[in-house]
Every structure is written in C-alpha cells, then in structure tokens.
Length: 419
Image (cartoon, rainbow, N blue to C red; front, side, top):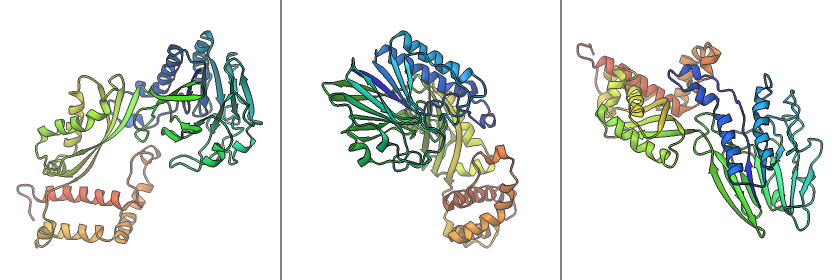
C-alpha cells in the first residue's frame, strides 16, 4: 500500500510587495503554488499511489471568485480518472467558517466533517483514516482525545491540522503533544500547519511534511510531500521535493575580498550547495554580504555597487535560473577604531560618537526611538510592510549605525574633503 501525505498548499496565496522588486519574475512567483500542486498530482499518478492525504490549508483565505476552487477541483478530477482517492481535513486557513464559496468535489474525495472526528475504512487495503476538519479559523482545543479508537488489524492513520506544543512563526491551533499522539494507538500521524518539514517520531511515525511551495524568503529549502510505502506493517517514507521556486538565504563572506571582480566567485561558492539537485527550479535568493573588506568604502561612496555586482553574478549562472530577491549588507571596513578615535578631527569625532551609541544597548535603543521612531511611523503601509529597521533589535540597529558611519567616513575622506 502506498500513499502521499502533503499539507499547507496555500493555493493562490497572495504575494504582496512584488512591485518593489525591479525585474522580479512576478508571474512565476504568483503561479508557483498552482504549479507545485500540479507536480503533486503528477507524482501521485506516476507512483500509482492508493490515496492522497491533505492535512489542511488547501487555500490561503476565502476565494475572490471560483477560479481557485475550480483549479483545485480540476486536479482532483485527474486523480479520479486514475482511481486515486483523496482525504482532506480543513485547517485554520480553509476552515468551513473561512471559505464561504462552495464547490461539489468529485466522488473520489472525502473531506472530514468539522462537527466531530470520524473514521473512513478502506477495507480493500485494511486501512483506517481518522480525521476532523476545523469548524472555524481559531481552534484552541486538543482534538486528538475525540478521535476514534484504532481499528484492530488495520493500518491506522490520523489526519490532523495542529501546532503541537507550538512552533515559531505559527499560530497555536488544535494544540497537542507527543505523548497524546503516541498513546492513541495509530500507526501514522499525517500532520499539517507547520511549514518546515519535521519528523516528530518514528514509532508511531509522526510527520509534518512542510508546505508544498515556499512563498517567501523565510520559507527556505526544498518543499514537497511524503511518499509512504507500507508493507507487512513496515513503513518506508521518502521526502519528495515538488517546489518550482526554491527560496534560499545565502551568507557570502567578503573577509579578505577587496576587489569587485572577486565578488562573483564568492557568490558562486555560497550558491552551489543550494543549486545541487535542483536545476529545474527558479532559485529565489536573499543574499547577505558579511565581513571586513575595503569594498565597504566603495559601497559607501557609490551605494548600490555591491548589489549590482551580485545581480550581475546571478546573470552569469547558465545551468540554473537564479533571481536575487534582495541584497543585504553587514560589512565593516578594516578600520583601527581605537587609533582612529584618537584623531582630533571630524573622522575621530564620528567614530567616538558611534562607539558611544552602540557601546551601550540602552543608549542605542533610546537613540533609535528618538531619531527613527517618528519617521518610521509616517511610512506608507506598503513600505512599512517591507524590511524596515526593528527599533527593538540591537544587532540590526548596530548594523544600521555602522552602515551610516561608513557612508559619512567615505564622504569625509574623499579627495578634497575637509576634515
């Protein structure tokens, strides 16, 4: 017996703020969730699985029209023609209290009720699938105790949308814990809600497959499903990557790199591990340049130089498609701060001022609130939703101060500048 376990498809999830990125592959990004789901259906058919489990959050929110639902239904019809059954629980994003429009799904599809947990028996496979959908977005009770007892002699699967004991970046819904799941007596728990793949336990096997397609720079790495084979009660599970856009965050060290021409090679060395085995994806990359380099002086005098070099390096990669979503700088110049601070000129005064602010966390936070608080409060909503400084993050504020210092130092030390 074989089945696929997937979750958190978030089909047609709205991707906001793409207009801020010149040259962004907007259409590829917006259709990525659909393309990944089509790959899932292709995989189910090619592997001739017996059924597909979807553990919630098929959609991201209520549909504006029926196009999203009809796309999803059309893919399920492909499975019906291959006699592949589908079992679904609804999660917080697609709960019955959230999705107002309705479509009649094909007869091969079972959506578990939100009123009570119940069991579907597949007698031809000796499989029992237990599940319950969310009645509304916010479910704060543990649903597991209400799940039916395992069917004796069957392979028992629990289909559940849950945050378990809590996961960073995810709201707490249908909370439960490992002992509660383990003592239920099921053989496999097909979980959803958490977007990072995580194998919680082996006996019973308890798995978050992660979401099917990363949607932004915080959802990095391969995304896909679990392909599960059960033979004589023994479980073999394989993760299958299905994403069409692969998000990565790269840290490129420029320590000792002082020539602009060397940036391309440094970028390529950092990128190679992300490209391995995924040449058919669009690679969306957020780059952070770190380290101590004389190139910081060039960037300070000609802002945007290093980002342009990164974009150029991405263009030179021929065997894979790479789009740099953003370039962040966390650089410093090889500056003898103690010696420079002793100078009795504008350069020394600047270094002493910066050291006094960043040297005390309380002073740094006070300065940020005084100098930036009112300004950030006046930003338009579309700008504020992006990457703006966090006034309670000393590390980020320190980086901001050092960038500002480098810019001023570059101006002060330009030929003809008066110190």
